Image 1 (spheres, rainbow, N blue to C red):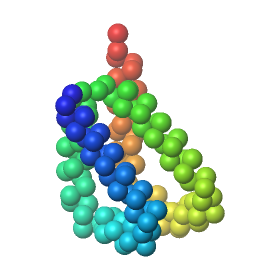
Image 2 (cartoon, rainbow, N blue to C red):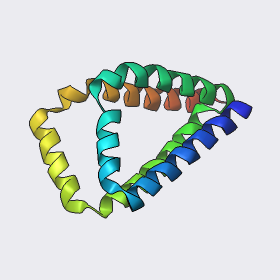
Image 3 (tube, helix red, strand yellow):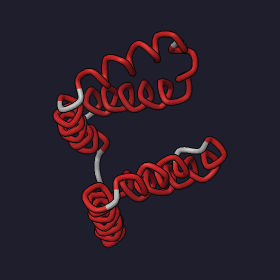
Image 4 (tube, rainbow, N blue to C red):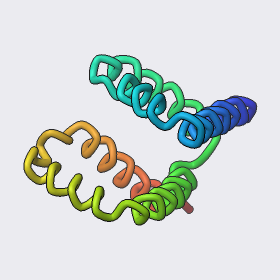
Length: 124
């Protein structure tokens, strides 16, 4: 359980840094975010995601994680409502590029959804 506390602390500190950047230096935040989403860093993001997932799923049932993910998605939706036009433009761009570009995240989301359903069905 200590691993979850450490992950939660890291998450909270990162949120505070992000919010401070957004409030005091939004231009620098944009530059830093461009660096973080560089495709060359995908080789770092995937193992980190697997590592965090390992610690999370060692301590929490997947259906509980899914409920938290649902809550997070709702928070993100609230955030997106503040920039409706931007979100519509992004959807148009995604439509132009095609969903095939997103095969890897779609595969992950489908895997999570199927695993949750199986877990709920098999529970006693």
